[in-house]
Length: 263
Image 1 (cartoon, helix red, strand yellow):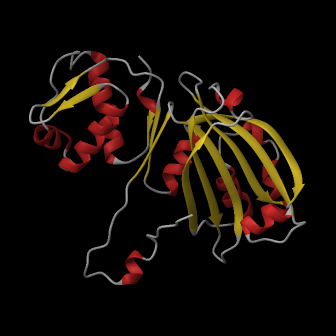
Image 2: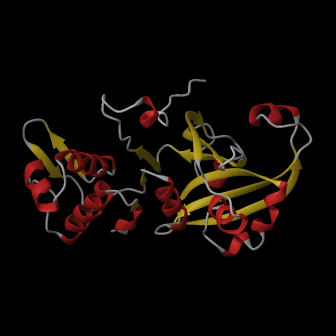
Image 3: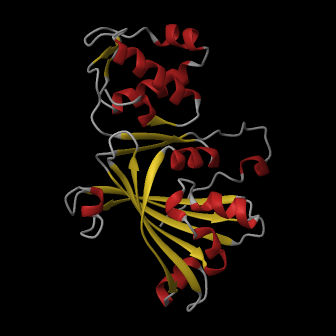
């Protein structure tokens, strides 16, 4: 049985998922048996039914349980296939994701932004940046989770020293060593196919489905200090997030951070 740490995150539903995974692995809920009802689980864990539903969905995505309308959830398997599930609720969870996986630094080189890169980043062509290529893997079975290319302004190059000796993400190193505070993260998620370059790194066939996640990190003055683009194999990575919506009586300012970006 793979470690419950493959379900990462600090949210309540992630904690419930890990607890239920342990119960299934230990035989408390045998294969073919029914799990307690949602109301029963909600009382047992002291959480809402919505939290229980989210936790059960994670277990379904891992192939551990199966739901039947009007009946409930029963245990389908005691061991899940290699699929890395992660729930992101905040920048803190992004940090947790990074330190709970292992990373290999493939390259770190100085580049000059070409016209296409400069236009995409709203910068000037010719600016010097650092480009880092990494592969991040599950600590449990070393399954590749992401092939990433990260861009960092040249002035922050000092944080890249001994990068292969830490699991801290680059944005956290910049915060700690350069005194920069993250105030905003832009994130774009798109469907893609795994390229011939990324396929051997991710140990999947070229052309198979993948998930592209680009994040841009901004400081207090709106300065862009990191851009990362990660390619995840569709078969081994699941992305979920929680959005807390403001009530109708709250002011528009309270929900100004909830936006949609269309390409």
